[in-house]
Length: 314
Length: 256
Image (cartoon, rainbow over all chains, first blue to last red; front, top):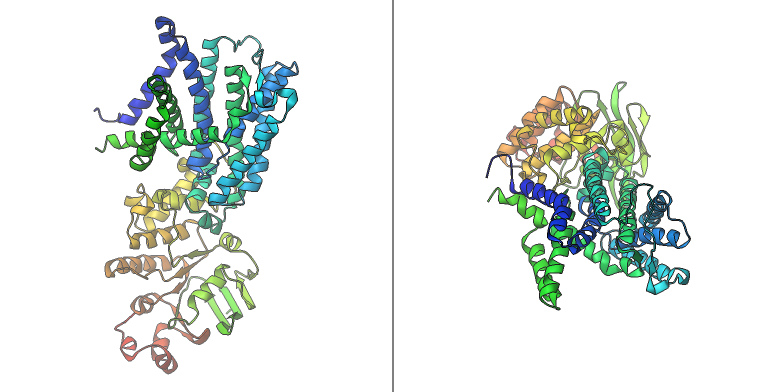
């Protein structure tokens, strides 16, 4: 191994190159499905990246992050249902509604700690789930088909390749944004609060308001992922915000590496590719996936990214 | 005392039937290293906690730099320049040593709703943090996680964090407790270097260190001040000798 290039850097560069060139591979091989699969991976990777901001860096174990996927998705779906197709309206509404939801549940749940915080975020997310499932006008339990994707002038999101690259660009922008945030003064406060909240308050940081702002940023980003997911599947249903989906996002973050820049993306790729591959082998793929995740949690603290970082040190 | 930086008058604190602080008055001049000694249970830590704002006092007055700070919460007193290092260290163990000190600097650098510039590269934060680490002799350990340091180094890091905010006065609660002889010596050397530029209130059991460092010493017994004076005066004080110091200690051996 050359000096200056550790395994982690090589891996991340290779991963990004693969993602950038994937549509070309798809065109050459004629495998259309792979673009669909990876669009989904990019979107959930974005959601996991936003969760990593509060979970990995902030130590806020939110078990309701899928709620933002639903809110973002339904903002797009409901507006489309009412005949408003412009993305310049739909997406700001999706982000705004997610931010507002995060502000309200953050303001209440951040007053609690530990297991209470987990339970209260879960409870709020499930509440949102049942509210949406109860909206008969928008399909209720059955969900809502989106007949036209968000309109952005010349940019045609119905083109699968164009949409793939939009998702990739937004994902990378969000990863960069999170990276800037966690290394800023704000990010230092967030990490200090994760490490020792009492001490932070003793030296003069009102940590509650910093954590709340962080919670809102993450929720807004989650809403963006939701708007993308709605466009990707041309369909939204309450299932996209069910609590098991929140669990999936946590698994991606933990598997990839909590508090690591590219960890959530790595986790999303690993989990969804594995899921795809294993479900091709057996119907009972979860029997294989479960122990595999257990091994990572037990023996690879810091996730896949943590493993890669250690390769150099042997 | 006219030029006292910290002036305490008639301070009292009661826990149930016990008077932990009994009508205590104290004046600490600018630039002085003032040590507080006394047997176990004399109320030394209780006093520090009241000065720092961790405990509310029942009666009396605490003036810092001419302002009545008795009702201010802990972080406000900290912002006014009264920095406390903890007897039990309470660090950011999973952050780097440098980040620990950086946060201490940042606490005094205005609000932190700044989302873009990398904090570790801001000269306004970085330079004071590096200077404080240098004074604590921890420069070489800056990149390590705080959890990798020894017990003695944790104490030094605590001190560096207290210094990072450029305080007007340091409250040190037993900085030598639990340190080996070598680490103690390192701490004494550092405090000696500090005392020329820093007002310090030191609570400490290590008599050798106290008599070597202090400009003035106050002796507490059962929450009351029984004597205040220079180390020579305290050594010569018969009441102190009876109440607290063994003959051997007064002779200068220092049993701790």
